[in-house]
Image (cartoon, rainbow, N blue to C red; front, side, top):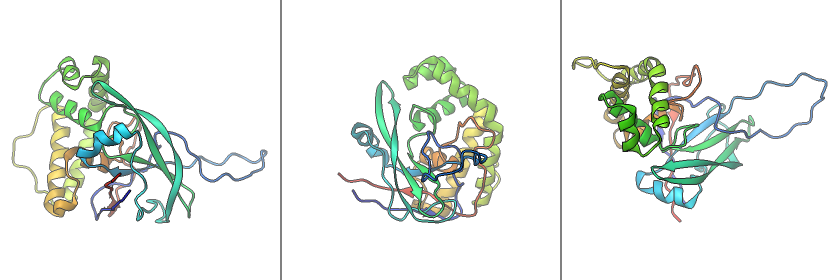
Length: 258
């Protein structure tokens, strides 16, 4: 298995948040009478997977591994393998069990989930399906029509849209700030109507600005860009999913060969 890393200077956010599931750092003995230390915040590292390889990764049942040049986003220390866990992934009518690898920083002991770029944290469906649903809703389609197009239950599509509408204004501000930082000029087109249409427009503007500034070094699709910028937390149930806007953030990309 070969891997390669891609660093995008000044592009996105550190994915500081609760990861999808557990995983503790190295065990340390402590006095039970002492107060329990605060649990460390987990981080998610987005590892790029080419769109043409998504099906193969799902069929293999194992997500991407740790790129050799990956560093801890908290302290810059060297990362090593730290087990993993399994989660379900749905691709239209197919459901897969996918192993998500974890990494641990050998300096600070923080653990990181290596989330493939085609997934969002805590969502069983592919990020592409969710982004398409938001786009269709922005165009005026209802949740039943969207659910039929995405081959998901109506309750699932309704949940996506309900959550997205709640956080649309905050996400629009985040992506608008990123587009401005990347050098995007204020748009001259008339403003879109509807919170989800505005969110999709903000994501698109930020993505186009990234492509203009970084060229082929930027993520190859709006979906991967959205996952990378949000650290997989685009629809996260947290009050502050993008806690720290950094001047430079690494977006990792790997290509795997059997």
